Image (tube, rainbow, N blue to C red):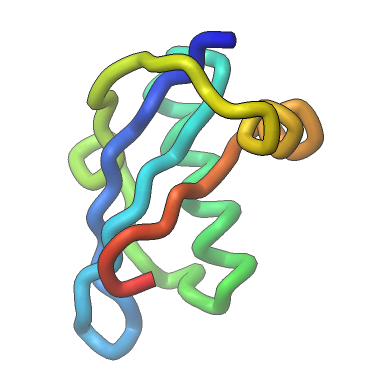
Length: 84
């Protein structure tokens, strides 16, 4: 299965930068931003500014089964990198 990767950088409440990717099966910039906001709210960072400027399409790739399972369950998968 092909997924679409949206590279995302946002400022956390304490000012540090959070870097994560939003993985989804739908190549839709607005949906990726919505998914980023949903995840940020779930970790107490609902005030972080997320637009298509902070969350932008990067590339498409295949995904491992555990990522596909999470996308099928929630619509997206968050791959956490720096500051998460």
